[in-house]
Image (cartoon, rainbow, N blue to C red):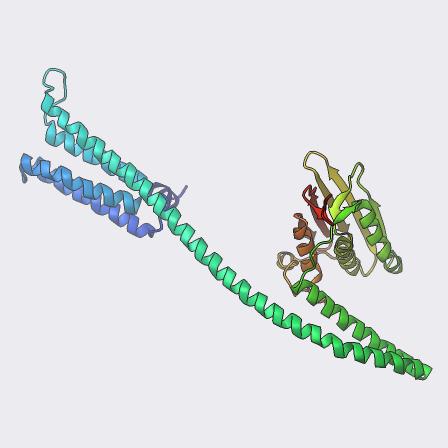
Length: 373
């Protein structure tokens, strides 16, 4: 253990710089040594020495407040030694002990009481200061979120209006495709595919900016996962990817929005398939944890994995590592899971694969059409 760490521990946790703490403590010790030397050399009288005992109250207060509890206790101990020299110059024994000697005990008690009390107040001041900083950061975050919400509403309104001319364009392109020559059909089909992709991006953005309220009902999670697997099975076969689904045994019906959770699993499965362009394995397992009343779903792929730099950003809106991605799929999935009081986590090793873990607790207060699930 180095000197700096020892110094930090001795001077405790204060918001003041370590140099200031050391300076205050050293100043108090030098002052103490000067006063003690002055009394020992009879430079000051005993009556003046008694007055100095009250001056130690100030030094103990400053030392404890600025330097910490340990320095304050040390200086209170030194002050007690000085008080013994002033008030009890002779050796303490039962033979020469008088009632006057009892005067020393209030001084010693007050010395230590000051150190303890000042440290308690200082800790509370530190805690209050930390709370004020946290509250200010929370208010600033709230203001930023309000601005983002307003910007999101404006953007959502603009996006909604874009869909109207886009629908008209799609209709006319489809009409032209029906009357075009066979050599031109590929061009029209490409335009239609891009229009559909643009429409999907707009739908994802609207879903992100204005998330739908979950329409919950009693569903079997195994069936939801199986439905999502069947939707990507054809693409998996084309990409030479094997899918394994291990349903949970004893899993009760959960109160969920079926369509939203199919969307969640579709996002995860699609990302997994895209991470395995040369084939691989997609494993989906569901587990029912009876004691915790929680369903756990793990989605594993043997794909390329996610770099450590990108791993912490996968749920950030509009963050994507794909050329044609919107960066909203995982963010929307996380919002859906959070709306069901669940959590989603991700682990990944580059070159080995990625695992998403979803935990969904049983929601006994879920209501559907006025009835409790």
